[in-house]
Amino acid sequence: MYHFVRDLRNSPYPDIKGLSIDDFRGQIEYIRRHFSPIDVEDLLAALDSPQQALPPRALLLTFDDGYRDHCDNVLPILADNGLSGCFFPPAKAVTEHEVLDVNKIHFILAVEPDKTRILASLFALVDEARGEFPLLDRDEYVRRLAHPGRYDTAEVILVKRLLQRDLPEALRKRITAELFRQYVTDDEAAFSKELYMGIGDLRAMRDAGMWIGSHGYDHYWLDSLDERSQEREIDLSLEFLREVGCDLGTWVIGYPYGAHSDSLLRILRARGCRAGFTTEVRVALVGRDDPLTLPRIDTNDLPKRGDAAANEWTIQLQPRGAA
Image (cartoon, rainbow, N blue to C red; front, side):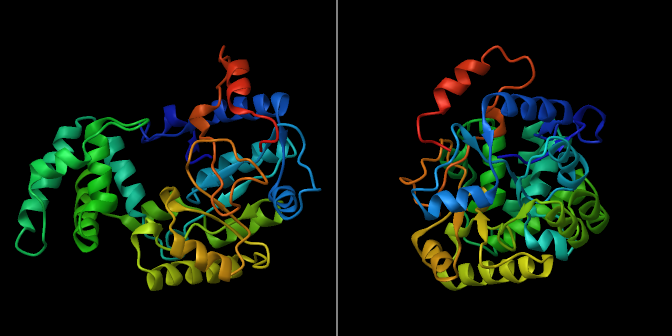
């Protein structure tokens, strides 16, 4: 699972969390030496029929969020190596030229090294809204949410959870937009066009042999929505895939934030979704895992150039029969 792949050192946002182009190229070299890269068609065939065995150490490359990085930096490297990838662009970012709230949060955090300053601005805006929304005390939000994650400090997790999930949606959007204006830019449309691929880019990716999958419409935590809202998210994303020119008889989804629920899985099955990709960090066991809740290994779990632990990684994460 990949997100940003860019020349971080020379980027206006060198602290954005992503992979450098050189490290991505190094990982592709490592993958070609130690694994058997497959495409989505190979995976779907194996999911449909136990007799359709995958090669040893099968590995599928996936890329979330539809960044321009993927057509500018990823596609040429994959093409040079004869590889295919599966790309999950969120429809709204591509069609409406809005910056997703998740990305606004990424760039707010990337431009301001002092996370306590961001939290002070955030909680000041929360306090201004206490007459409009039912809100918890500041200390209670801290107690519930400020716990370090796999890659983030407690302060960063607190910012992310408040703005991605735990504040009321209308307030989340208002505060995120204001912090983005304060810390990053007030020209959201121009920023969006630089950040994400367009419809033409995605069609070109598809024509080059890449697979384009659903990533929802608004990039919501899909498990936080009621069933009708989940249906709307999926149906709008399918309209988008149709516009890109995808075959809706063989469509797949990458869940934003990895979030899914029983009601969402029922909707996906009813609409013929063939596979779903989570953010659970584990090797997928074809024939045992539910095809709609496949785990993925993060790029950060893969050795970079010159990593002495490369062989250890291979042994730890590749049980027999895994993909």
